[in-house]
Length: 318
Image (cartoon, rainbow, N blue to C red; front, side, top):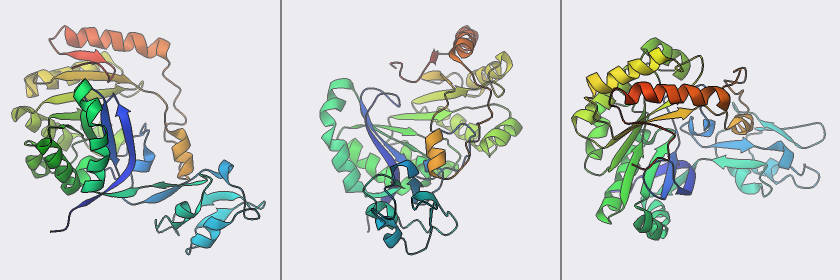
């Protein structure tokens, strides 16, 4: 039987935000959501794609290796002969241009890993895992769009005593989750809003399947951390927080290891530009620390008063 491969857009060592201890984190390509504030737009498409950084281009006169490598004519140049953009309709995602470019003007978003290649990277950090209680986290994009690869990595990690964490938006069929209960030490998921219509308007899909899967994880007594990104004009209200609190208490019976409130920060805008996309929240009026800090402090009091283990940020010890 052929070992599965996974399409990964980033591997981050020494991560301390997504699970306990020092971790290595794999970010899988492809996501069924389209959250307006997403800071990893390169993880949305399930296919490999080039990112362009024209300021790093030396120009056709001095280089031109990418132009020779692209057989689709998908690279667009300025009148001065430097890289302008990528014709996304013509591009087939072969990434030949990124392999030819040595200045970083063209970057590959999406690299295929075998299970063994991923495990080689994981094993290198074993000393950090043992010292800090860390391990491997697989995130996205959406990790569960590539379940065979993630499951195979987790199975081997469990066999070698390495802690495993799955971060998922949970917009998947319930049966996809089944094999992960035996090999996953920690699940991390978001509750962005209780209202399905508001969730669909800002995230591209309804939250009904997501909430159903969160409830299912709780019923199966999975070790579960929930998060909410706090955005003004979306969910930064007492009412929205109380509604999520109701769900945690009434639907999950408060079986949550931790509920983390994360302030919105404008991140990843340069990656949108590299993909020739507009940043969806470019017109957002902002949510400065002086505003969100007292908001989050108030939300924490509301939730903690109801017995929910709510915390600020995503690097709090469990």
